[in-house]
Each structure stands twice: as C-alpha cells, then as structure tokens.
Length: 310
Image (cartoon, rainbow, N blue to C red):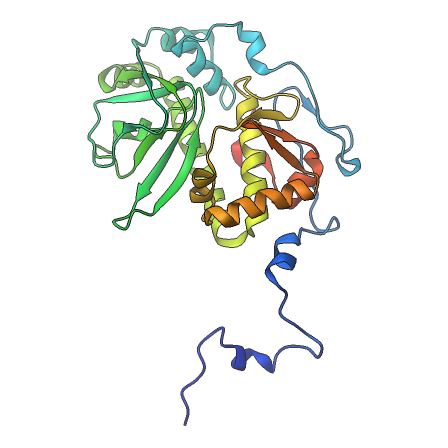
C-alpha cells in the first residue's frame, strides 16, 4: 500500500477542489481584504477621538493631543506619567511619587545597542526621544524584531524580575533614554500600590501587542501585516503627542520593517507599494501619511481594543 500523501500535497487535495478552481497567484492573495459585511473598521480609540461615520471612510476627528493637558514638560517623570495615564488612572499622589524618581539621561546613536542580549541590567530604561526595538539575532545573522518602543515606553521593566535579558534593545535613530536604578523602582512600587498596578498593566499591554504581532506573522498576508503595524503606531504615537492629522515620522529602514513583519526586504517594499497603489498611505522623507484611515484599518482588520487605552 502506498504511503499516504503528506498534508498539503497537491495530489491529495485535488479531489476536494470544486470544478473550475485554480490556485490564486501571489498578487491576488495580497490584494484580498476582508469584506465590509464581515469586518467593520474602527478608528483610533483614543481619549478625545470621535468617529463621525466609519463606513463613509472619513478621517477621524480628534481633539488636541492628550499631552496638551500636561503642558510642554518633557522631563522623564512627566513622560512616564503621560504614558501610564493613557492606560490607567493616576492620582495626584501617584504622579508626585513618580516625580521623585532619580533618572540619568543618555543619548545613543542610531543602530546601536541600548541593552545587549545576555546582559544583567541593574536599571530600567525609559525612551525619551526616538525609537527603539527589541530583537533576537540567530547564529546565521538573521534577525527578528519583536516590538517597537516610542517615547514614554519602558521596554525592559521586566528586568526587575528577569535578571538576564533574552533579547537585545536597539536604538533605531538617535535615541535619548533615561535610566532609573532597580532599587529606586522597587522602592516606588513597594510604597505605592497604584503605581505598581499601573506599571503591571503597562507590561501586560506590552504582552497583548506581542500576541497581536504573532497573529500578524502567522495569519495575515504581507499587506495586512504592514497596514496593521502602521495603524498601531499611529494610535500609540498619538497618546504621547507624536502623531496627529493622520501622519507621523517613521524612522525605519526597509530591512527593519521587513524583519519586524517576517518578510524579505523585496517583499516588504512590494507590500508598501501595494498600499500606495490602493491609495491608503504615502511615505515621503520618513514621514508616513495615512490617506485613507478606513481603508487601511479594513485591510489590517485593525481593532485598537488590544491597546487598552482609556
């Protein structure tokens, strides 16, 4: 008796295909987007963001960025307060406690490591200006980027409990970072339960973003992956007043974008061109302009609820 055909074998599946069926080519697969009847796009779910008519495809009408209420203070404590306040309720006492944290500031050139894989850091870092990413690099030199971090993010706060870093943290462009010693963070957490809960919630939200990235890598087509990343970064950057009017600076190289999306550089470039042809985005001098939010959100199946903004 012949051995059974492996799963996915063309011969084994042929009898189950309806008459007239043909294998769609790659271009057809990339252009497929969810039908309007099965998916309804959602605009960025931010404080002050109002949706007038999603199905009409209008751009979201938004109030001034949330940071305006906090003034122009860009100090490390003010930026951390702004970020935590986007996902948790902070009292005046909480804000005052965060304000006592002693930070030291350092600037890293682009494409340099902030924290190396295998390090055992004694401090946490807070992104003040610029972008950073977490990644692992295999022995053959191939790199996987797991997450991007923007001002207000604390990308290595788990080092309070996980003493050896299993991934590296790299500055994308010139990036300014504030460091606070573990002993000072522990003192704050032990003396202020509400701040501890806000930091824990922020860490859990970071995990939800990682899960969403797994869904993109495993189940979304290349164009959908890129569209989803563009939507997420717009929503996140708006919470710290670094994006507005459906545009923001995107400092990524084509190789970094490809490594975050699990694509080759050629395929990443092709996907970006496809989004342009669809009239959804343009990218000019590192500025990403979202031309059609509703179309981009539909292509990405983007639902911002996983970001848990309040």
